[in-house]
Length: 141
Image (cartoon, rainbow, N blue to C red; front, side, top):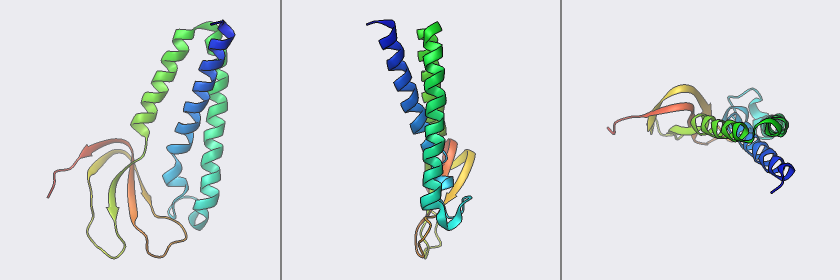
């Protein structure tokens, strides 16, 4: 395989990973009723998450293209580190509360950023708390 083809592959991989990480991590906050866009979180928040993901994809693809010209191994190690950060920071639901039931269904505590998500445009939905960071399981009652 020629060097240009290898650079192209690492660039596409970096862009794809950047898009998924950039869209997925802030999405529960941006698309929530409690997020910065309130009732318009389902539309505007979704578009902002896509924009953040697209911007990160472009930056990472350009960085990978330039980095792969110098060091193919270093670029792949950077991508592995990005995937590891994405796995750790990926939002995980740790608590779910139904609107008419006062009981919480907490499965973990969060050592990171806890985000309350409630779907905009609903009157009777379930609220979910997401953890962006590391989770510690809780003992069953």
